[in-house]
Length: 214
Image 1: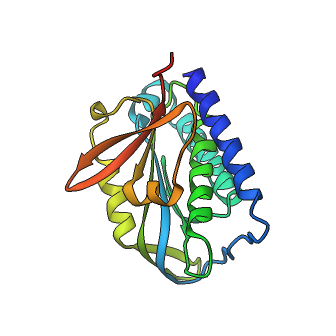
Image 2: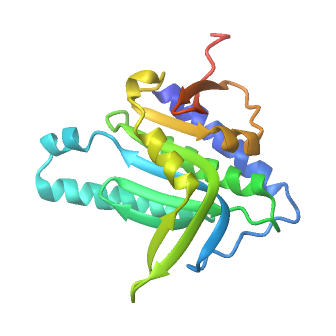
């Protein structure tokens, strides 16, 4: 697991340098405003909350989930994402890909956020992260500006969240990417590889350590 954490950290560093290499890059305004169009969605789920609950007092579990959620929100904000919702061990965010900007930069920021999350999780925590790039529709309602988000990217992320973990190489720290996300990223990273999977008529990928040379 320490090897995977180091690899995630190295890949995150390379993505950050690549983003900073774009002289014309300007972060998209993340003010909570209605949005309809293409986006990359990041869905995060702690998969073993029931196991954690058995080893913690109720107040300890609440404090733990609050601390983890706040940490994830900060990482999303640092990578210029928009927080859609957070509840318990679930967090959902998105990166807008309007026509006027480079979709690949926004998707790389979403991947950088996912990698920064994965590299800090303890081995005892089972976490699944899904990156899905499709159309979304976002609206805000009520005095607290609660977010309502729908669309093909959300449906796809939910489908990938539901795939049994036994299908994957990584059992505790799992990062899945939709086919369109991989196309936008055009990933060619040393020491990492993408494993193709198939579910409900769609291809998707799992990011894993490349052990071919080990």
